[in-house]
Image 1 (cartoon, helix red, strand yellow):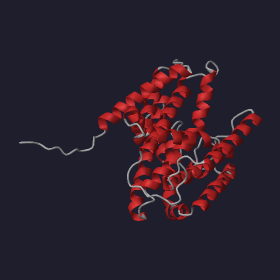
Image 2 (cartoon, rainbow, N blue to C red; image 1 turned 90 degrees about the vertical axis):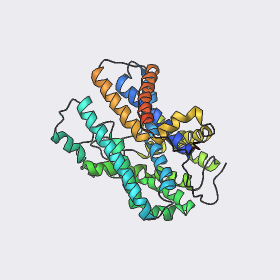
Image 3 (cartoon, helix red, strand yellow; image 1 turned 120 degrees about the horizontal axis):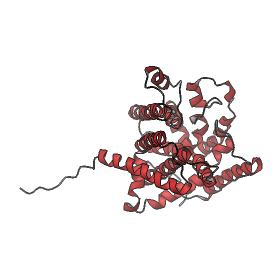
Image 4 (cartoon, rainbow, N blue to C red; image 1 turned 90 degrees about the horizontal axis):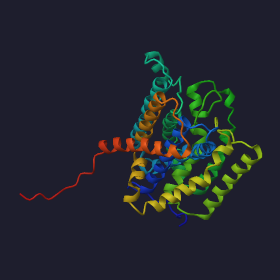
Length: 345
């Protein structure tokens, strides 16, 4: 199937994008498990899994954020969409606070003091394995501020794709001039690990366009994605190491294009069957819940099992266990849709 000639406005939720996000959740939890409990020097295969998952995960979530935002927000008037976008931003901010405080207390062993918590609340302290969550708060605010320009741009498909390419120039930002942690979260910094939404915004815009124009399989998209990933691989081979990730170089940004397009098409195939992939779909519908709960579990296990060492294979079982617990928490807190029944007296 190719790109539709005209934009299509949808009101119903799309299962395919939930499946796409669910696949990303599985990968992220597996990656976190290996990062905490594996040793690349002992289990070299772990390094490859970590690198590949790191490459695709955040860009994939940004793409899905744009996709969902088109369906949920940009098809509505600003005054109706703005409150919901602010609530979404608040949710990711709270998720960051919970994960960040847990990391400092459980993993780092810091005291539960107001001084330590205040630094996280004011975004002066950005704990590890939580910084990507606050990036989505920034991303949602950026999408809200640019609400009108994005709607205007998305109506001009050709120009929008050109702007997507131009956005890659944001990777030339003078990161050395950023010293504030609050600004570093938006624009990138050399001082700490960041996932700056400005540099990743091309994927947000692509998500909007894919949702609006019903882009499924298209040779032009495939060739563009393949070319982008080929440039990444050329850089990787010529340098002998991964392109810069913190802050991201243009090679890091374009690298996952082909893999993510494959994920996207795979999700389109998976949506044909409901029951076999229901759990993956649930993960995609409840991304924040899964990421926060699995983070808490990983931090807790690491603090109590400091000598636990896993291979890439055994890491799969632990990741599955963490996801199963999160799935149970989701299940007991999810209310099924109300169904009217005929009751005979």
